[in-house]
Amino acid sequence: MRRPKQDRAVHTRELILDAAAGVFDENGFAGASINKILSRAGVTAGAMYFHFRSKADLARAVIHTQSSALEIPEQPGGIQQLIDLTMYLTGQFTSNIRFRAGVRLAVEQGESGLQDYTAYRWWISIFERELVAARARGELLPGVDEASFARFVVASYTGTQVMSDIATARTDLAEQVVTMWRYLLPSIVPPLMLTHYVIDPARKDLISA
Amino acid sequence: MRRPKQDRAVHTRELILDAAAGVFDENGFAGASINKILSRAGVTAGAMYFHFRSKADLARAVIHTQSSALEIPEQPGGIQQLIDLTMYLTGQFTSNIRFRAGVRLAVEQGESGLQDYTAYRWWISIFERELVAARARGELLPGVDEASFARFVVASYTGTQVMSDIATARTDLAEQVVTMWRYLLPSIVPPLMLTHYVIDPARKDLISA
Image (cartoon, rainbow over all chains, first blue to last red; front, side):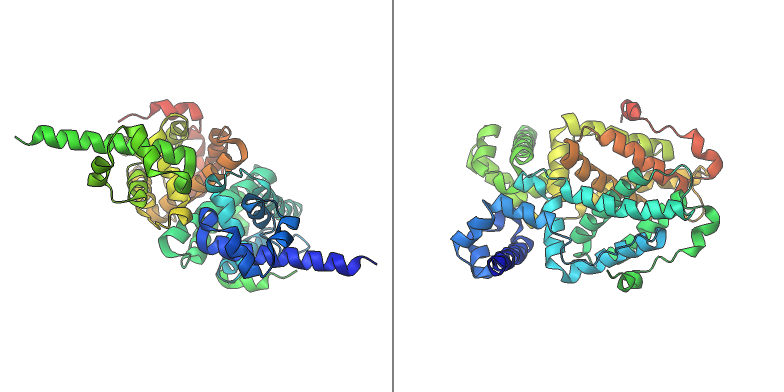
């Protein structure tokens, strides 16, 4: 009989997180104020403190739920799906505020003092799943370690995104992700398979849950 | 006859930048205060405002002079020197506060609102010089573009450093930079030359001006 109350609590929590993501996205961690978040969410301070203890707690939740509005494929598909997934994420920076704010807060953790690796660990696991599938399909060279390469793709993508944001407000991100794969693929797939893969930002639309 | 006065001005400017780097390193951009920087530098507000207009102006100067206490080789040497240079930088994060603070401010620009690409552009040019030398020495595969690969190395290194900082306070950075080169080298050097290169954090000491 307590279902409706729980649903309402979940709804309020999401409302607050959407508002927080918007305010962090526009102002950064230091520039964001609890009051701004409350007024954007249209909730009382009491409702917010029921879910979150502090601004740092809100930032942590935005980091942890950065993928909540993403459509990550349920089944891993190997190298092509891994490439397409990075193209999909690149497109999401434009429209998906929960993702954009979560990534920004995950990068700029010196400001919030969070030192929270959870989101990076999660992305590594998502990418590693694709590499394990790639291994089973014979797409990976023998020397490639699925876990360490997954981590390196997350690192390369992170740095590429940070630089593209500063240089061009991410307008050249898709082009830079193409360059990234151009320099990563030859190290991990057998030479004869190289031409089988399509590195194309337009394939971002092929990803859906 | 004005030389001594100019020397003193340069000295004061460096004193302020060292103090600012220390305060930004410990507190981030938002947490740093002009007063903290003044008291650490031991200079008056007047002396500081003669050189810098604002906290953002100070942050920009720390970003731009992040390499001032580094010893970058005068002559480019190709792939091995490029690898060694990244190992040298990895070591510098421990002891070189101007470098560490400059890199941190360059990454966390959402907080300062600077959107300044100068330092990235400079590192790309330094790495590109090594790749141009590598090309002349026959170390690069035909398909490798010196400029775009230099940019990708800066991006990979940036992301690797950000993640290592959050995950382990950079204690695993040297190990992650080894992994980075393991996955970059096969894409850019001829297969027969691969075993000629040494990817070893201890080679950081081979770099000197």
